[in-house]
Length: 94
Image (cartoon, rainbow, N blue to C red):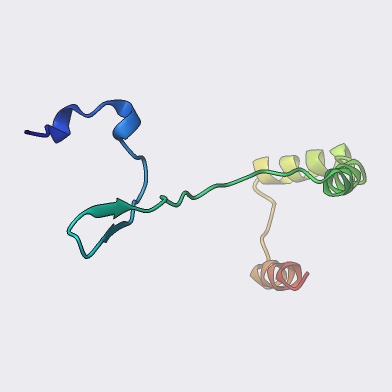
């Protein structure tokens, strides 16, 4: 009897690694295959915490945004690398 491995029905195909164990009689025993699974669980406490954090974020201070935009567009905005470095280091410590 010839077995054509290219035309197996879908029920005989596996989508993951399989482990084969040869017995002393020369027959092959197929052990159960293992699958990787991922689940997503949304904890209502963490969702509520994130919601509170977002709601307590400061509002946009439009007057500051407008003043910054005007100084950048006017070419008068100056960048202080030391202040940028200090702010960067301070923000990574949190």
